[in-house]
Image (cartoon, rainbow, N blue to C red; front, top):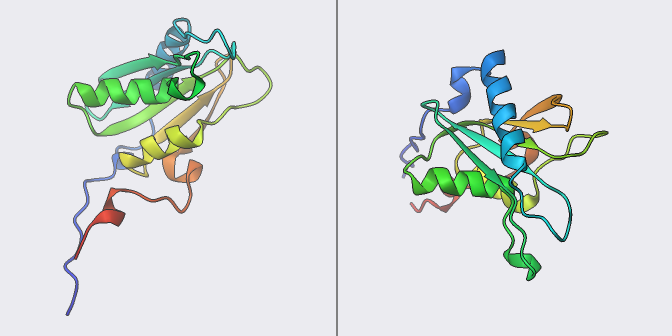
Length: 153
C-alpha cells in the first residue's frame, strides 16, 4: 500500500535572504536584548532577536538561576515569547554575545527548539562588533529530528 504524501508548510527560506536593513535591525535588537541578560554566574550575556514570517520581531536574553539547569538561553526566550503570542513561523534569528574573536553558535537545546519550527530559516551568529556569520537551522543541526518524524501512518 502506497503512503500518502506528507504536506509540509512552505519553507521560509523561499522568501530569500534578508535584505541588509533587516539584518541590521535584527542584529541591533539582539544587541539591545543582550543588555538585559541576567548572568551573574557565567558573566556571559547573550541576546537574541527573532523575525517572524510577517515581520514581527521578538527579543530575548539569557536568564540564569542559582540552580543552573533551570536557566534559559536567549534564543529560547525569544522563541517562547513568539509562540506565546501565536507566532510559529520564523524567518530568522540573530544571536549576539560579547565574544570578540569567534562566532558562538547556539547550544544543542536551542538548536533543537529552533528545529521544531523548521529546518530552513536563517541564524545570524553575531560577534560583539556586529560582524556576523549566517547559517541555516539545518546546518547547525544536521540529521535532525523534528515534528514530521513523529507522524504515524
